[in-house]
Image (cartoon, rainbow, N blue to C red; front, side, top):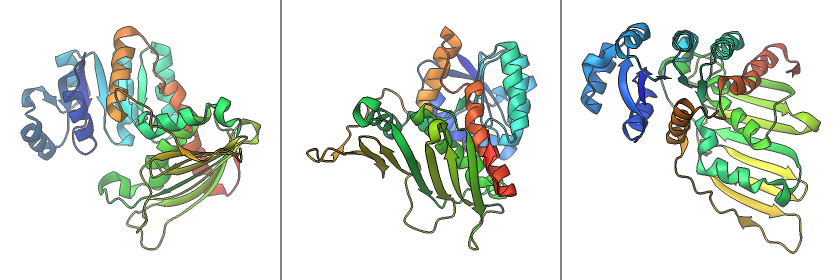
Length: 327
């Protein structure tokens, strides 16, 4: 399968490396608007500069690819996605699906109308830790989940568009945790309520810290606290999680999964890591390949992923209004 990658700087490095390492997917070409990025990446990855185009339209017309991987900043996702979809070309897009719910719905509507696959790169579902946690939460082992708490603290200095966003933590990072929450619970949220702020030492323009309550069917509630300008004692990128269940407690702390059964005769135990052939972006690329070539439906289509994005942007509305928002 031959793909065009749109955007080859920044996060584009991860996808360049992932595709170059794949046995099933290869590059037809690239789209990049920065001459400096092109010069750097041609030298770093030995790319054929003749296959790098300034626009996706030109690249599609010249290369006739099987698929597109969109690694542009969020504000370009709508235009890239809709151009590819209207051209009959499947899309694997970096998250978030779009910078607004309105634009996300436009992408979903076009994908549904055309019947062309659009998949979102929610790679956090496909880590060893997440898959192990999913297995540990088997209702036969731990019973019904009653509450979830999540803590996330990191202090990355990205530069670029993230540091100019109004809500960088929630929109660009917490989308991973909210999508993972939906995956682990097997349900969609019904309401959200939260508060965001920007600590005095923050290097972000917008709010880099937030707390939220996310309610799921049956009253199950997840509490979320996070900061993207933490100055010490950071969590892993997955965050630290606690699930209070009918038959015990399951935790993910420092990427280790532990189970604490209620049975007084049972000792806490570390859950053995779930074996995986591929993880993270490599898993997503493999799933995308099989979806495009065999017609298999991947887990994170845009039609499904908009439910994760809905948590994000309705939380933003709650930040602004100070009220609970029903989804």
